[in-house]
Every structure is written in C-alpha cells, then in structure tokens.
Image 1 (cartoon, rainbow, N blue to C red):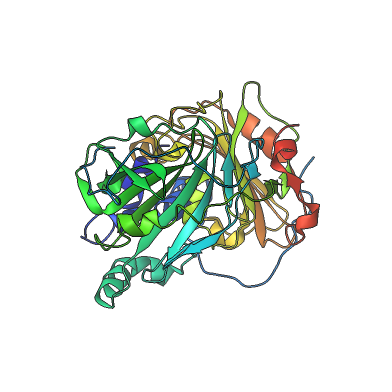
Image 2 (image 1 turned 135 degrees about the vertical axis):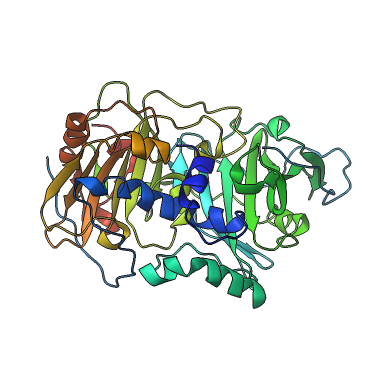
Length: 411
C-alpha cells in the first residue's frame, strides 16, 4: 500500500481539520491498526492501544509536486564530499549512529532496507507523536494537536534516510532547488499535503537532501505543524553531523523457516516494525518486523522510501513481532488464528485484501503477525499460515538471542 493511501485511510473519520501533519504523523501507526481491523469480521476485537510497561518473553512460535524554496546557501558549485570514509556495507546494515544538530536530534537508525537506512528525527520545539495512545487519546487526538499549536509545540514527523551509493536520484525531486551546504551538493523542496503528489504543497512539509559521500545521498523529510520550523537552514544543519560508524548488522527477533517462491526481503525494523510504519511507531516498544515483496524492488532512482513512492509496494507480506497492546485483536495466549481476506469493503477502504495470521505468546503479551500487504496481493491464507508457523521467535527481551537480518530473513 502506498503511503498516501495510508494517510487517506486513517483520516476518513477524523474531526474536521486540516489533513496535513496530523494525518502523516499517525499514518503508520493508525493505518497498521486500521489494516488489522479489517479482519474484525473474522473475530478481531476492538482497538487496543494503551501503553503497557514491562518486558515479555516470546517463546518459539511454531516450526511529489512542490514549489522552489529559497536556497540555504547561495550555490557555488560544490566540491566532492570530503571527510571520513564510509564503509561498503551490505544491505540490512547500519552505518551511522544518532547525533544532534542544534534543536534537532537524529536517533539511531531502526529501519534498514536493500537501499537505505532510516532514523527518526526529533526537535526541541515540536511534539513527535510516535508513542502508543489509549483509546481516549486517539479519540481526542484532533484537539490535542490543536492544543499543541496553541501552546507553541507544533506536531512534527521527521526522519533521516541515508541511501546506499547510487540509490538516490536528486534530479527526480520535483521542483527541487539546488543549493550548496558545507561544501556539499544539496537539493531542497516543499512537499505536497498528505504525501499525494496531486495535492498542493504545504510549507510545513520539506525535503532536504545532500551528497554525504561520492554518489551517495542522505535526505531529511520533515512534516511539521509549523510552516516555518524546522526551516531549510535548520535541516541543513544536519549535514556536518552525519558521520560513518562501524557497520552493524540490523538484528531481528525471529528467523524465517519458509518463504513462498519468488518472495524476497525488502526492509526490516529493529525494535519497531518495518518501513515508515516503524518510524511512525518508533517508541511503541515493539520488537521487530520485515517486509517481503513478490519480486525485487528497484535499488536506484529513488527519491523517497518505498512506501512514499507512487506505485511502490503493491504486493507482498509483512512479518511483525509486537506487543499485544499494538494489536487490534484481543490476546489469546498460545493461540494461532488466521483470517480470510476481508473482501471488497476493505479494498474500498484501502485496507488490503491479503490473509492474516496471529500467533500469540504463551502469556498473551506479545504476538507474531504475518499479513499480506497491498491491494493486489494473491497469497492464499494457507501460504500465509505456512509462513507464520515456520517462523521461530527469539527471546524478545534478550537482544543477544536475535539474528542478523541478512541471515534471519531467508530459510
């Protein structure tokens, strides 16, 4: 499912308010729940999103449209990037760590794919809503965002994507403005409302990308309730702080025992679910996840993470190991439940039509979920169930039992 489809799916019943940052900040978290809620007719319970403290053990479970913006720095031709040598690391490897740049704070990366790594970015002057909320908080969310604005704390969803060499194409940024920052080539653009390129641009939605190494680019994407902040100048302040670290394989708390023919791993989340949904739920306390697609996705010519690209992830399946409080279904200790595709109604709502399986831990406090993604998925329920039962989940409270993704994602 494309990310602007997720935005549309989660805003259909919101209070009457501007569908900009409010939509996007909650898109990953609430769309995942709405997607899972599509199986309610097969016995799923209502929304359960309260925070629960404590650590649990999961046993083995089965065998752009935009207008030009003013340059940050008047642009003389930039020299080639200089500085520390970046490692030639394999996919699903982290090669940088978090750092601060003024009021902006880049976290350690938690999502990795065949083409990039992603880290959440927080701001001293903004509220980043990537934690679970109680039912009441969900219902009152619109008012909460308005209160944040009135109190001088606008909402922000921002993330830094560090692309592998050759993966990012700055010439494809629509209406981008070429600039030079700290001697690096850079491009900046204002993004559309709600991530849909057919919608008008919004001043609070910004993309700032720079060449951090030869033919290798990083991009910070910022959706802010305040059109003025973070400014392009503030986003440009991230350039000099991005440094290479020792390559660290991304770990996941499970290993895969069975894959249908033709399906390949695309991206993972560690201590969160995979992809931009994992960034939107970065502080939910979930354990890990992965996305698979029917065939390999392109690893060049990108301008955004896969979910934010038009026509990106249209089929495949997802694996998630999450807290029971992140699921829509009521806990069923030690149970395995698989559901039939939800049908035309879910398709109309943009929820996806693939099958879905839950395997609950013995204490019911965590759950392994395998679900089809995208509107064109043809995986039958029997295959989804076979994938789920072939997964072995590690001790989620002990990262020393987790497995590097490059190994874990293939039988």
